[in-house]
Amino acid sequence: MKFRVERDVLADAVAWTARTLPVRPSVPVLAGILLDAGATTDGESPTRLRLSSFDYEVSAEVSVDIDCEEPGTTLVSGRLLAEITRNLPPQTVELSTDGAKVIVVCGSARFTLPTLPVEDYPALPQMPEVTGSLGSDAFAAAVSQVAVAAGRDDTLPMLTGVRVEIEGDTLTLAATDRYRLAVRELHWNPQQPDISAVALVPAKTLADTAKSLTSGAEVSIALSTTESGEGMIGFAGGGRRTTTRLLDGDFPKYRALLPDSFNATAELRTSSLIEAVKRVSLVAERNTPLRLAFSEGQVVLEAGTGDDAQAVEVLPAEFDGDEIQVAFNPSLLQDGLNAIDSDIARMHFTTPTKPAIITAKPVDADADADADTESESPDVADATYRYLIMPVRLSG
Image 1 (tube, rainbow, N blue to C red):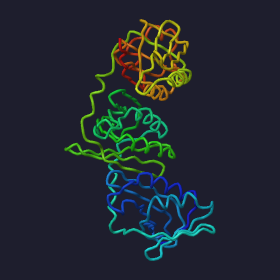
Image 2 (image 1 turned 90 degrees about the horizontal axis):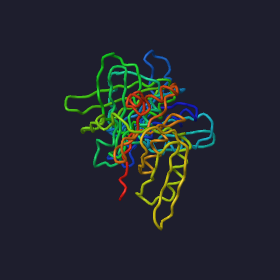
Image 3 (image 1 turned 30 degrees about the vertical axis):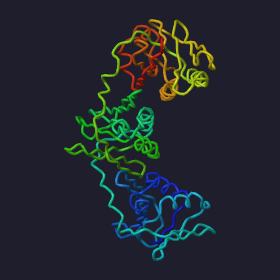
């Protein structure tokens, strides 16, 4: 095998493929990236290099243009190749094989790497049939809003995933760690207009994948499930594709957690509230809450009690409904506010001990409509993003 390719092209492709490599591979070959420079089907000179990685859970594959003299396939340590290509000078890279060695030459730099046995490398899973597609930027934004609420406790694997629900042209993403719930709905382009499907995708894998596929305009989603509940989902866009196995287990019936009526609604400038939460929570000890008292025209944020350090800050707020004092974990509150894609955040309340919901204020809502509906459930139902957060019970 022998080919030439621009440094930036190769470094980007290697870095993307290497991101899914296992830290502690069960067998040595899984630490490798498979490089396949193959001849084209029409008999012309080969012009594409396919790079792939696989750990039996997640696979990644990308193709790039190359100037190839000699087709071939080789397997080399992925993390080492990523480090080398990232630090090469900005010149054309020549990569070739010499027996059981891979030689990388770029400018005056030359590296010789040992290869891994290609024959021991597992075959990559086939992509399922495409289920539908949507804009890559919209998909990445939606996933980032929801994945923040996924659990990180591996003893509860069903909570470490994002539930993907497909109903016709509506794609719904949901995640929860029992203390908060994030739900985002968005339109997409299904292959079949009446399709209905559900999948539970590992949140970290989904978040990394969605962020890495924004180089193309669209992302294709391919879903495959079996009668036993096991299955796989694939994503493709911008010349890249990746697959991952789905999680097992029953995701909580999250729709029952969403309140259908509210006694109060507050509207605040999102950036001001985020900064105030950061400042006031500086004095909050670990696992102690941030207290918020809402009344007409304002919200008072407090943290700390007794002889401990204390902080108080008052912010203007448009408030409608019964006055309420509620307490939240400050980091969970910040996560929800950071996910709001709006200058104005809406907070919907029932009682101090029941979940609150944070949404973005619709950009096209006029003042009169808001006055009539801001404390009613249709307002929340129309929002594409909802962040439910459980309050902290205050003693006394």
